[in-house]
Image: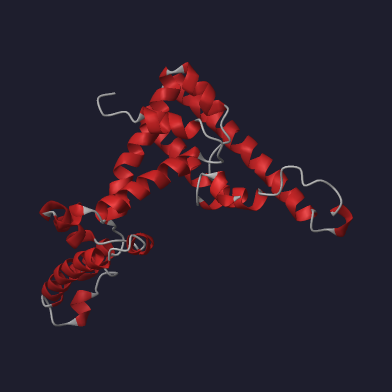
Amino acid sequence: MKEQLYTIPVNDAFAKDMECPICAMYKELEKNAVEFTMGPSYMEDDVREVTDKIGFCTDHVRKLLQMENKLGISLILHSHMVKTNKDIEKLSSQSTKASTLFKKKDISPLTSYLKDLNSSCYVCNRIEETFKRYIRTIHYLWSNEESFKRKYENSKGFCTKHYQDLLIEATKNLSGAKLDEYIEVTNKIYLDNMKRVTDDLEWFIDKFDYRHKDEPWKNSKDALPRAIIKTVTVDGNLEENK
């Protein structure tokens, strides 16, 4: 592959005991992206030009605020608002008739601009660019390194969102017999581990029945946070949820 391979973070994530190593990789990318955004970079013209244009999603604004740099986030949001106000003022003044602004099933220049603005996020974009390379690295290592292939197959599976990502991107990164084998293996890993957590969660529920109160918990004490990881893509690190 000509592009950079991120073998270290991928191998490190799959070496840990977690329900979704992809979640863990994504979380680290998100942490780095937030720190970059609120670091000295926010004063750089090229970065500010992009944040002015696309802004942030609700979730990442909250994470930016957690960095406790109120001046920094204020400066970023102020220049973003100045640009947004200027753009909307220009687009809305192109016609004084509301019917021309909102005609043809809401596809006017103004509503198109608003749709793009409300679906964009600087932090999300920064994460996504590297995240796709992580997924490509997974497919490359699985296809070319037997040790990683064993590590992959012995993992605890994935959350449903990242299971989807792995399958979709596999069709771009693999082909032929290797693609068929990868999909078959990944399906099995996902289902086997989803069933494992489902069974643990079922026993966790059963323990609330007085008839089972004196029976052992087995592997069900942390079944709920693990089920959340599998279904909602919250966090790949079990230790933080115990």
